[in-house]
Length: 134
Image (cartoon, rainbow, N blue to C red):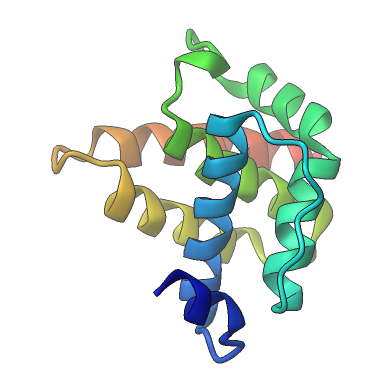
């Protein structure tokens, strides 16, 4: 499944976002610094964009995590929020879409059904959105 998925450029935007989160998760968990190459340009550019700007993205996150440390976030939540911050800061994707997609990913991969992580992610991204609009 892994190989075919990578070679398939017919992924929906939702599937592409999931692929990006998985790659960012892998890079984080393995502390990987290898260049990332993917045949899908959106996935390729997004993953490399996050990795290229990770210091700035993490700083934005740190500045907006209230009473929370970035290293206390799970790998998956860190990946989701990093990608959302990248999109908010470095792309023209409307923030409603960025936040909605991040919450959908959180619901699917992180939330334990109590809505706490979704609420947390929503609050952090809302803070960041306000911060970036200044």
